[in-house]
Image (tube, rainbow over all chains, first blue to last red; front, side, top):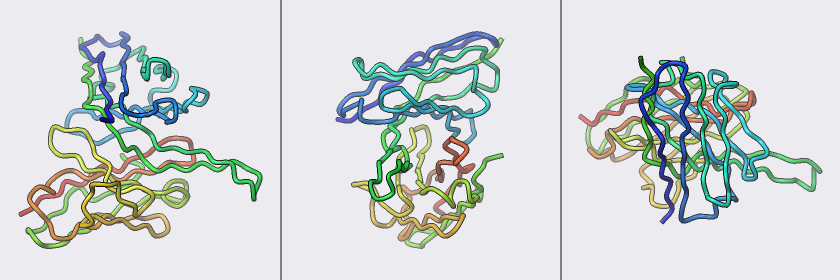
Length: 132
Length: 109
């Protein structure tokens, strides 16, 4: 069964740090990009960051760049989100998701082209609460 | 303020059809494909549509997607009570980030 399981959510004070983990099973983890997406209480979905299959490329939403770091350990089929300098507005359920970003080399054009198909597998989420 | 714009709510009666719109710009929907997600209360989002109009296996053909220019739509036919959920559109933005719509709460009357 294809599955993602997040852990690490907790109550933390403003300015504190937290590390979220997401462990995958049932698929070839090192063949997929992975994303973190969050949802504040009563709000919509907000993408946070993603990371390429080999960890070589990483992208972040502006509001977390410089404070959050995404990483992965393919040997452990796991992706992580290190969150520093946490703010009250970072309080949310954090989901990890399998990201269907694909980079193909088009021989006819002799260039790489990226395709962004969506996120097809989601974990159950882990709750981060930032409060004093 | 979400980058992609969706109506906050939509409704229909069982058996009816409903369409949810998603408006973006040339840097997201205009350049990259759109995906749609269903989120039932208290659960994780579920991929409904990818590549504008493709359904993952297991998604009923009552759900269909389309894209035109910088806008996209999710159509649901033959509404069922279990379709009551929040629906989100998403696309990659050329500023190197995924962007989501604010979500549409679908009520089945």
